[in-house]
Image 1: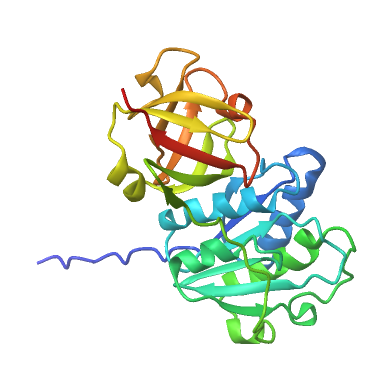
Image 2: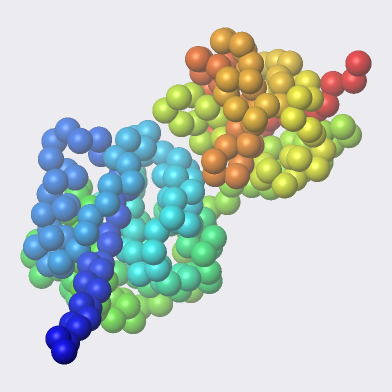
Length: 276
């Protein structure tokens, strides 16, 4: 009788993600990938490199949004670093089975807090990089080596000393007002959709799909329908809906809510139900 040979499932290579504001011009992303692959047998995943330049808040929101879709053990590497070359610290975080590498400017914190209790350490560059470090490209010379260090299974505890204080970031808290809610804009995506800090469960306690809402900022007021999809309204009309990230967003069918409402990060947005 022939023996049945049970094949072992192949071991998964460690995953390292990259999220930057570099774009793809100039070879910056490629050089980071080269450093990581030269030090670790890792699978590299590009989250995005089109974060608006130096927009730490946008990067933080994007990172927090994608965390649930990656397996434990992933090393998330984020380089949105307007303070590169200054005394700001390079940090590594372990939280909820994930690792995060990037600058100490708050960009990593919302994601790290969303999946656990962050353990933050200052990266000891002497531990992970023996070569000269550029004053202007820590993505290649500090964060890529640190990501490779963690992806290769090296001890997190040895990457550097524990930090008791670090730069935090918050997307703020929505608040209730008579007949409505007040939130703020935390991100505008490439379609001009405005994502707010209002979670779906809070919004749907007060409003129902099909309701007509008064939506206002300091400079703009519009009547907006609460819909399920972008196409629930006619072309050029605004709509409020719950996005795939679980936050309430404003959109314009075949247009830009960012332009219509003149929003940037932190713009206060008031939603009120219209009475007829």
